[in-house]
Amino acid sequence: MIYQLLNTLYVTVDGTYLRLNNEAVEVTQEGTLLKRVPLHHLGAIVMLGNISVSPPLMERCAQDGRSLVWLDESGRFRARVEGPVSGNVLLRRSQHKTHDDPHATCNLARSFVQGKLHNQLQVLQRALREHPTPETTQLQTAVTQIRTHLQALEHAHDLDTVRGVEGYASKIYFDALDALITAQRESFRMLGRTRRPPRDRFNALLSFVYSLLTVDYVSALEGVGLDPQVGYLHALRPGRPALALDLMEELRPALADRFALSLVNLQQINPSHFEERPGGAVLLNDTGRREVIVAYQKRKQEQVYHPVVQTRIPWGLVPHIQARLLARVLRGDILEYPPFTIR
Image (tube, rainbow, N blue to C red; front, side):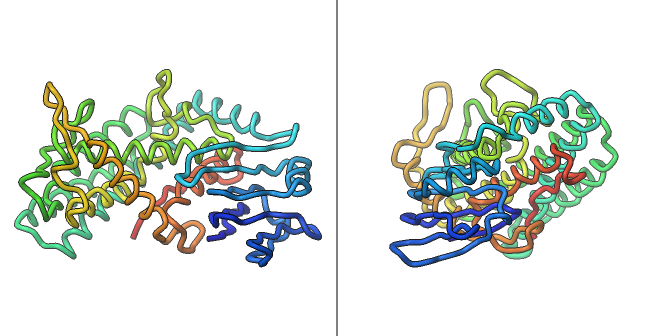
């Protein structure tokens, strides 16, 4: 598919060729013109998969300060090409300065958590509407409690309070998530969230899907020139992609949790896809990881409505849109970061 969103051209069609023609970018495949976009409408071009760019277009983008970003078929960052004069150093400087500003840091962290809690509510409320279970009362109680925490978040004016609200709401959410497992219940019971290591099959599945989502967000942030390790909600630690973890909070319930639930409820994943390790750790085996990765790539091609760009886009583009929205906030182009929310 080919999308023009937020002054960025996204090309995801394998075998396409991008060229410059009369101040416009033309996307062709085997000589057939697929799309033509005036160059002055674009601030960046992001390409997923096996896509080629003509030298004149590459040179012109470098001269204008327009970035060209290549991602592989899985969405992993491969390269970014820019000219000698780039605003990315200023963007990263703003990113670092914002981290040193407690008020700005709290505002961003609050936005990330607001998006997460909103999407947690949507996941639970959809389950109540579509799949009534014996645990209906538990789900209704969880919805009420998370809604209360979401309202309290509006009055959280320091980072510790924001983190506290997020922690309390997430515990309520994960305690209720087990009720959404409607098939293979005895094999996939989830008694709260456990990590490092996961102690049951569903937690193992969640941890693996979260790791895939983290890779997507690291790629998205690198694609816009942000440092994935300098975040606002998550504490800074060597080797930890704190900003990727910040941004992906919104998509944990909206994409990752719903995806994991569908794998289990549709029995695409079963107990044979897991192995137990000494000490009680439960992990996906090689076959299980392969099944999840293939299904995840298919899920990322499905479309979802994005409330900011007001159109339907593939799930796989959501991290890239959100990274660019965050970059706009850090540059001062917009005042507040708009978290991605589902309906």
